[in-house]
Image 1 (spheres, rainbow over the protein chains, first blue to last red):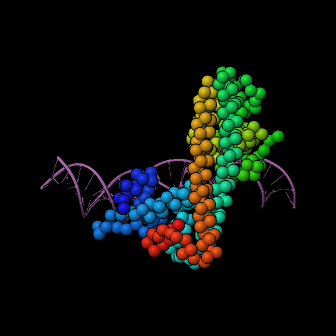
Image 2: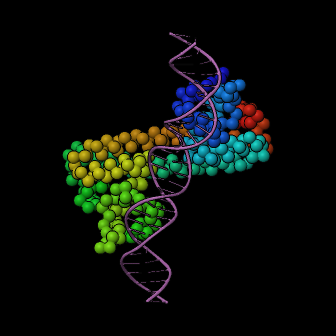
Image 3: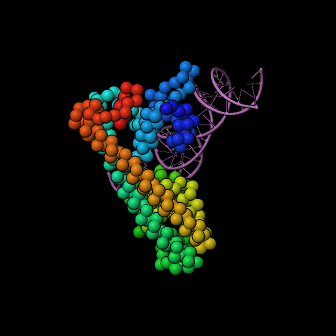
Length: 137
Length: 137
DNA sequence: TAAAGACCTTGAGTTAACTTTATGGTTGAA
DNA sequence: TTCAACCATAAAGTTAACTCAAGGTCTTTA
């Protein structure tokens, strides 16, 4: 089973431009070409693009993802580096989740605050802090 | 209690430049000035900067945060808009947390994969997919 | 057979959020 | 009194990650 660039774009919810950009940046070095240069994607290429999406979501830059892919190409001599990389990303994502939880708590506090204020028709319902003449909490 | 811009920068782990940038963008319109133009921050200004950090962490742009601050200045007539905004941000953050959890699961899978491979000294320990001649899982 | 619609490359443009540079004013200790 | 250490503005520069435009080739379809 093979796919055109637009098939892949639809499947992964990326634009054609983005996929070509990733190719240019060296993220998908194993995509084959027809005689006239058209890219032909295999399932394994789609798997790789999925991994790239995951690494991006974990906060990695394109440049760092490229490094990882180069390590993959280098074979078993880079296993430790790749392991360390994923350990680092794991802890990075765990940190992000904790931060996001704190953020959510603050936002939920605001939701409650505004729900009460909307029902009352005024922010004066709250004992509050003022900044200038403007209510901020 | 008042603070200089560098005090605030230290306290909130921002640079002086970033704080001035936020001021230029209209995010902190209530900071006072001395006769010669030096900014003087009150505790309420620091509270507001903390709220700004939280909104940024939830994925809001500077432009949208500015809109929120304008709504605050407009008083009770914007209560519903502000409530809706926080409901929207809450659901945005909840979505982000779910996505991050999926990402973490994939990364943990990779950690296990590489731990086994490092111990074995080779990726051949895994039944695997190959892309070109390169192992990607 | 010609127009539509894929695909390609190179290179320039965009956007957000800073970040730096250039230039200059104020203040307080040595 | 000078000089370091603050503060200020305006405007240009940076970076990442796209995104678009121009100009060209190939293939399919009316």
